[in-house]
Image (tube, rainbow, N blue to C red):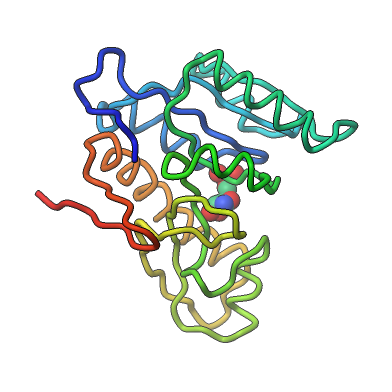
Length: 211
Ligand code: GRF
């Protein structure tokens, strides 16, 4: 597990990985700026030159690296990411809409130190079309899952899940917006639990120490 300790000088160094709009990144930035999340966002890793996440990072003075996966082998891509993480002494990674699957080698090195947010109640509806799949299936409740990353896609040990009702007539967009509202509340909260050392990984299970 993460040997962080809130007391460590300078705080835990977080890298956020994003490929798109970056609203989850924004919620993390806001929580840090409000003083609700006690870590340093030391790096944005982005693989998409058009991602608005890059603009958000720039606006808030967060260093970012654009590492385009196109034209690079998977090994080269991850090696570049790895060296950026080392350079900045990153302790923790938060995937926030990062649209690349990381190799088992990379994941293995970050076991217990890399989290992801998925917009459905896993193990239901993994993959990139969670809202579409949830609506097509006809579930009445969907939600979000924040989990440690393991070698499976949207598969690792679950830290936190929150439900969101699916309404008649919901589209991917309307359901997505309601789920995102909850993501923006819970992702920073869970990161703060990790900062406080309250999150313990025990095999497939995650124990959260309560106050
Ligand atoms: C979120 O729905 C998150 O659950 C998923 O990717 C989306 C990222 O949205 N992993 P944004 O780019 O942070 O707005």
